[in-house]
Length: 446
Ligand SMILES: [Zn+2]
Ligand SMILES: [Zn+2]
Image (cartoon, rainbow, N blue to C red; front, side):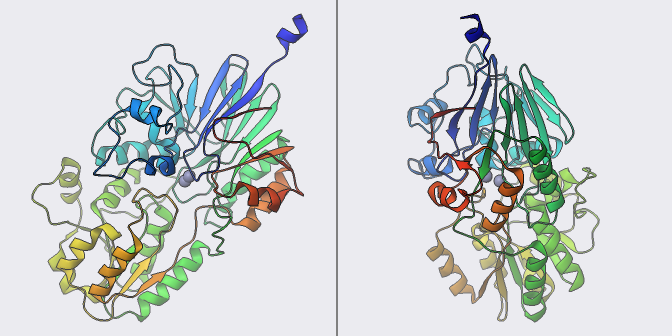
């Protein structure tokens, strides 16, 4: 009887990120300690009910009722008795972090320094609402090498390479052994040595269980950032007219790539106000080495034509070199314009001449600028006479890299996360480890 009471219980509630890309929420429990690994929005589940901006969620209760958010009393804002010790964020993408706005303010949020600056900066630029409100959250930051204790649970964050800076994976040490959690990661990126640091540490910890992402099992592509640079540069060199390039605002590696191309080909990289604001706020981060949006002769900021500007927009426009649609129209052979499919009204004003190019360099399944309907976007390109090039390097592991990582880490068991192909994943790696599929909402014991 006494022995039974003393036996520790370690389990994981798979609250989101199972059978879906993103929406990660894994509740790790050891005796009286509980931490939530990521608190992301399930964009797939949300999209089954809502279509913004015409049909948006009205409040948290609606999201809980529809099963988009877990029904856990005390987890949310203004509720009593917080049921967990902390939320721990792997990185700032919304499919991992967005739901912290709704969190009970008595629950602290742990994340890396860079993630915190990105979260705050992006939040400032988005319209405020119940899903974008960081007011009153107690943030605590960690770095690689730290060991954060939550009762019986020891959290060891380790940097990894991904398509947004400041990403982490975790080793969660419990009284029943170590749980490794990949977050989102890749091994072919410019900072693959960081991912290697994680795989090495994970291997040493001899994990009982590995929660490992598998985003790319049906979109394998072996392009590195260097290849994106070479291919895009080739297009830019051969293009007489304007070059438009679409990439995620928070993908600083990609921005650096296009900046380098602009420099080498004597073009001006014209970024959006949003990108500029983010770049400026990350400028002090010594580890990142972001291009200097204020002083660099090859960077300018595109001023959208509108009647009134938000304070953050006025702030950034007053501190940088600004270009309007009229400026861009007159200097087309000299620019690379960062522009998403949602900027097409602006491109109407620019009136691209013959011989231009559109480089699509963002195909992450859920970046924050949701994919515009492909057909509609093609209509715009047809109108402008802009051919499109698809040149991208993913933020996620390629299938071959996944196998190498799992073979190295040698977990006793593995649960595929952040993938729509868990069964394919299982068959692909079943000779390396025991794969359990789990299901959203279920609990696994460690
Ligand atoms: Zn993700
Ligand atoms: Zn991500």
